[in-house]
Image 1 (cartoon, helix red, strand yellow):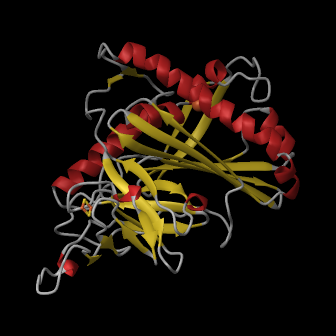
Image 2: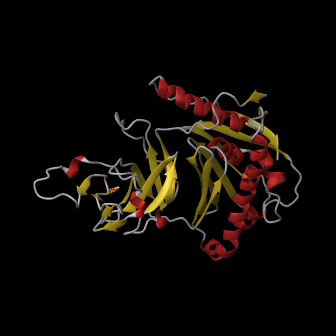
Image 3: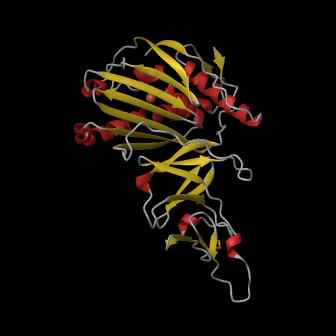
Length: 352
Ligand code: FES
Ligand SMILES: [Fe+2]
């Protein structure tokens, strides 16, 4: 048994890529505000349609730039009309008269590195802007080039990032929380053994036939294989192969603030008929994620009293690995050395 005291629950890791928003939410000519890791950020698209992200605070007197408007691919602050280019440089200060030689181009808003691929926008949250080291490669989603998400469901969980991550990777809550008829019904927990291997910044449940006899797996057909990987800071990718078709589920956990965490589930698939089932799948996805969210809300009632918590073998080993990965990430950064994955290949057993 382990106590969860190694890592402060509210620690939000830096120098990692976080899921920011679906690409479809960024429309040319419009801005979108979002707080990520406690930082106010404005997202938009430049004249060429390329996505950008800036600190959502005007360097003049602090007004959110997202409250302004986009003009000719630039952002205009609503207070005094200062304009900023998508990479953050100030291009115009309307109040200046001839002879006032303030160089606007020396004024900058902090810009963030972002990456758009397969309909998803990721943001790199740096620890230190002053000594920028190159960002590592952004997350790779196993879908064909040009693939777009078929279904996206995002919900805000009123909890610190760790409770959202641990809740999503926890195998033992299924029979109690996700017991809707269309998932597993009232099936009693039964023994499972799953094989895990360390993988980049996390671990992978190696490809296997899904053991759950959930209705959703059953309708996908007989010859199923699934591989599930987890990596820091909070990314779970499930890749289901159903004969010659693929279904890829991406669950991304993004801390918005210390006690508010967004969980986004995105699905890609190549089965044509699954798209026809969208009117049924959408409410199912909403209910499923909502079941996790409701439990987190209930959990907050206990956590307010700051109780000691437990992690048990083997059902909570994934959570133990998560905390160890997090700790190693922080230590390797602090000691300026390479990250050494603390996970060892193992078979874990539990009933669920
Ligand atoms: S506060 Fe933005 S231009 Fe003055
Ligand atoms: Fe769940």
